[in-house]
Image (cartoon, rainbow, N blue to C red; front, side, top):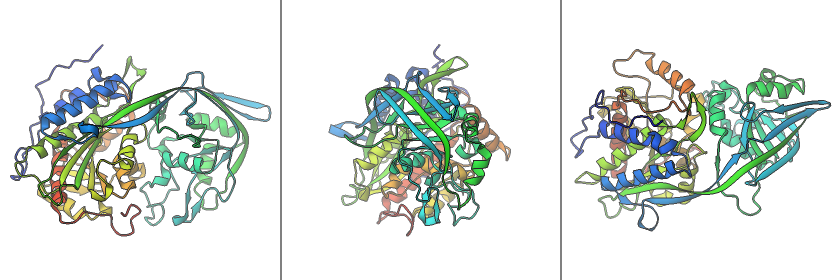
Length: 534
């Protein structure tokens, strides 16, 4: 049954008044209604390659047009085509492990999830298992989990995350680096010629529960189309902690013992004496998805070909496994909220009688939930060259729980933009707080990372943890509850009593900051020595 799409008129947050420099204030009501529509059941979770996803892209393009922003896509349209391949593991997928006369079969979705990456209707593999710790080779920290061991043709068994430390000079201390992300694990396995890679899930190492892994990985995977002859992993998979215990028991090992062993710089790969085999049937289909892009030209003839970029991803998980009878993963917070802010920013920027010097480019990207696919494609096929792109300010999952007193700008401290951001915070009576959970590696989990990868200063503007009129522990309790029960679940859906003030505040922060960047004489940059320096 479709949820009600009537417009509730209660508990609507008022628009936030902007500084006098703006022609119009940002409207919390406008943002609210964009979120309401984009997370409605009619859009069926905005899955990439689905009718609901196409409707979301068309809606965003229409709203850009109504806002007065010009088409910035291909052939005079608002769209940039993003070619992808959808790979969905079939229910008959088999994964087994054997040591001597002992054999274990793992059940699809219950014990393991993952996809073949060779983009074939059926993939078979058979290889010796070797435990490689966290699977990290980081010469800058004198860390190598491989120690020269040849893993070609092997099935790598490993953990996500990285060695724990509070020393900021060692793997950035508490902050997770890219070495800790699951994307790096599979990339490194492929670089080393492994046949397959299997991550043993634990909630502390992943940062989220098994239900999140299952809902994200137990469905169609979005992959870049392989070039002829391009190598790939036969399987990129996760197993639950319980299944990991059963697997390791074949080798006389335990999860906690190997986690401890992986903490040592002296760790060496451990052949497990286990043979892992897999038969993975896949439904493979070409997908042509779309980024949605709009432009508000700048006023300076010399600088208007340079852009300040705002991004948010429009996709979510579509339809999937039903939870309490609901199979639509609406993605209201993640990330209809970011799209609502993006559309309101485009309206406010276009409504200015006097435009900033540089242009503003607004991009709603596809495929974030499938591994930042849309933003990665844009970064390597840009509509404006990276050398003429001043900054990317990204919005992803802003909570509509009232008025914020602080923002989090994870990554801004690595750029020359930080003083402008600090000034913006003072103007809006906000403080800038550090990431409260740096071990989650959020910097590498959203679309700004694709821009950083090609040298463009980039970060997300997030709500902080201090909320007006709320108890000190309000955000932690609310975040923990959302993360445990609603993140990547069908219950991430619109509520008529939400207060969207924080979203208007986050948008206003980005509007002020982006305006200052657009009016600077020089393009911003990373601080010298930063890994993303231009």
